[in-house]
Length: 75
Length: 165
Figure (cartoon, rainbow over the protein chains, first blue to last red):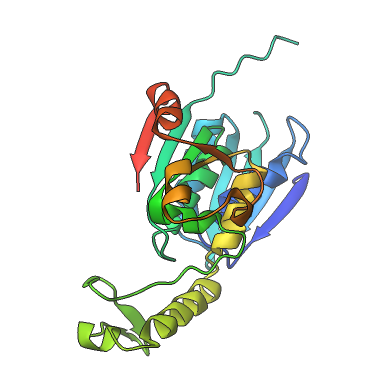
């Protein structure tokens, strides 16, 4: 179970990233944030976001049009 | 705890356009960069100042924009310029664009501007443009500082990315 879940379904670029950044602040260091999104661009964007910010993208999966990301709050 | 050193990357964008469509790229990049830990400075000049007005009233026009094709009933509709010139057509196009923005879950300009302020994006309004078009600082949202080309250049010279939109 993630420490927090962000439902970003129906939101388009750059809102899932902006909301995720905000939500990460509420996750303790070492904790995880689960993000649900429907924007296909979010797959590449969350990978880039994590590489750049130093947070860890633990999981990136897709299930019937919903993308699920697990981000470990590192930085 | 180690002493905090500000070694964040920096970006500046010169924002020169104030139509609804052109307001998006600088605000999307600014807010996303800020979310990625980048220090962002936006310099609003000429029509870009519209984006800083307290009361936003951004419009879009297809006049002279051959690439603007709106999705309508599964097709893409381009309007001849002679139609785009008619009174009310810009208002219609703006309404259509705003409806699409809402329907597709795209942020509103208000929302992005709010996000930019929240994430400490530095916003500089061009003093010369204010004078030129007879606006006051009071016409702009709070948190905006005034400056000129030298103010921008000082920041641009030490920034990693400088864009002109």
